[in-house]
Length: 351
Image 1 (cartoon, rainbow, N blue to C red):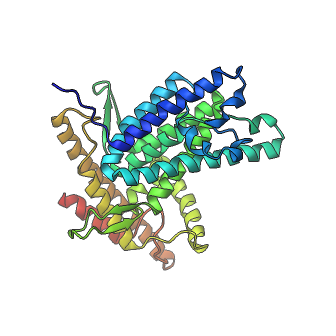
Image 2: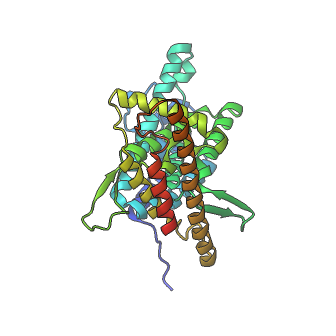
Image 3: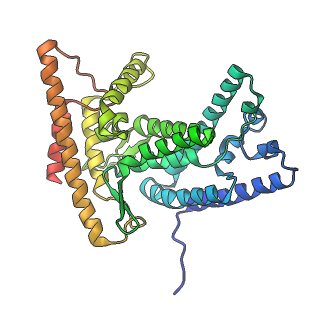
């Protein structure tokens, strides 16, 4: 039987870039008497970045050791493989460009600012490289596509829902940055996460999966309640996070930086999330078809529970506000109107 490599074209290109840039980076280091600035042609060093602007892209694929290289390879292979099939090569290419260049640029600004405040020259020569920002971006994308899917590891010994991946990823990189001194990974993880969420939440165009028409209707952003910023965190802190996120969002709307979501946008977003969740993750993570069927049923039940929970919260909030004063019903980043949650519940029941 002929062996075939079933990898989409853009994912192949990204894997090739990872190998080429990582090998070239190591060659530059080995041939320059261990001078840490010699890798500035591929890795990002804030002091030199303006003279080599291409490093804002190449730094993501220039890994410094075998372990991070293997992690990056697995991220691109499995994450890129799924997202390219879900979005297409063009949309994935746009996403990759945004979540690699922008986080690296912001990270370099952070270290330039720290250097200006502390006058510590080492901060201007920090080497910023690796796929941490890309890993965080892919995790956010999976959270959007299949938030309630359960990934099983070690034959069911460990079960983790996809919606918990972002908070675990950020917590791990934050602790590592504080305790182990991997501060560049800490910065890249948070900036990559925020960049990915902002792009997917407000800007990325996507097909209207809930529409019965075949005219190729497209939506901008994702207004679904399950993709609101607060839903990336544990239930115990979602309330405070939602209050802070809503305050920032309302300020940006007042400054006309963001366009507010309407109740219809939130309703359509919830329908989109339900439609996306029907497919689950591909066989690259779950090979057992019977288990996949059970997972889909469990996802449907969890979506119904989330819709009911959202409805209950909206009813309680509406009851409290009606007792005090009328509210100005503008949707926020943390959810939609009461009728939106009701519509989400009816959609989940129909599924």
